[in-house]
Every structure is written in structure tokens, then in C-alpha cells.
Image 1 (tube, rainbow, N blue to C red):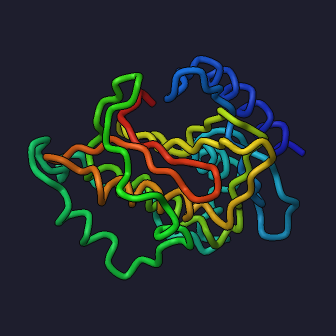
Image 2 (image 1 turned 90 degrees about the vertical axis):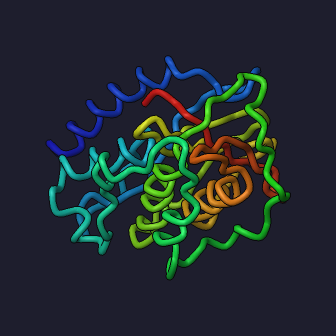
Length: 222
């Protein structure tokens, strides 16, 4: 019971933060992303709102052994000093991380190439090197069996991941609820943007799936 009360208090905190978020697309509405997780192996599933970083922080405060209990490998960031210089293209470093990684089911189901323009809001590019850690967090939570769900659109966006001034957004343009197979599908969209839009160590862009949703990668205050 205390754990549920704690989660509710954190939900209120992060819900107020979401209200202040600026939509990545003019005219689109920002909505909280909901994660459906168990806090303990023998416990009921709990809804947590926010980014993956916020959700994991909440889970580990309730259950410090959560990652180990659910077979989640580390999603920690590499030390800041190991990040390449801004002007260096990070494709080589990025490829070292993704070797041997299983993509989600949607990497080849996007309209390619991705749109690498800065959008109507003149998005700033995020560090390509740091984007890989945001993607890895989404791939690695698959054992916890939480799946992306978005309410009916069109014109609804959720910030899925944000840290180190790198954000991954997921937008639903369908008029009905949308469910994906895994958060790896969203990470696949970010990977497609990285592969098509990385320039001089920075990446910004948007890619559209064949199922009425899209992914945006951009720099963001987190």
C-alpha cells in the first residue's frame, strides 16, 4: 500500500511537469505516456506516467531490485567525458553499440528516408552519440512486457524518453487508440532517424510508420 501511495505522489509530480511541455509539432497536444509495469515479480501491474527515465526512477525507488527481478540489463549512460566532440560524426561509435542488438519489428516499416528538416518549430539537433542510450533503454525493457499505448488522435504526442538534452517523441495520428508490440518499435523509429539524418555528430528528424504514427528525435530540455 505504501508503495502505491508513493507512486501516486510521484505521478502527481510528473503530471504537473508534463503540462508545461511544448508540443514538438504546432497544433499537436502533449499527453502523458503510460507505462504498465509490475513493481515486484509477484505483484499487480501498475500504471506509471512519464518518460522511460521517470518510470524507471519511480520503479527503482519502490523496488531497488526491480531491474534484477525482471531481467533488465543496465540502461546507464556512459560517462560524459567519453562523448565525442560535437563536430565528430558518431556513426562508428553508434554502430559499436547496436551490433548484436535485435531490432524491434518495425525498422523496415517506415517511410524512408526520414524527414531530416528541423520542423516548423526549428528543432535543434541532439547528439547522435547520446541518442543510442535513449534507444537502448527502450530496447532493454522488453522483458518487463510493457507495451506502448496511445489514446485516439489525431495530433497527440508523448515524450517517450528524455535525458542529456536528447528526446524521443511518439505521435499518434489515428482516430482510435493505438497499441504497439513493444517500445522497441519506437526505438526502431529513432534508429531510422539516426541512420538517415545524422550530420556532424548531431541528429534531428521525423519518420512516419505505415500505421499512422510517427517518431521525432530532437534536442529538448529534460
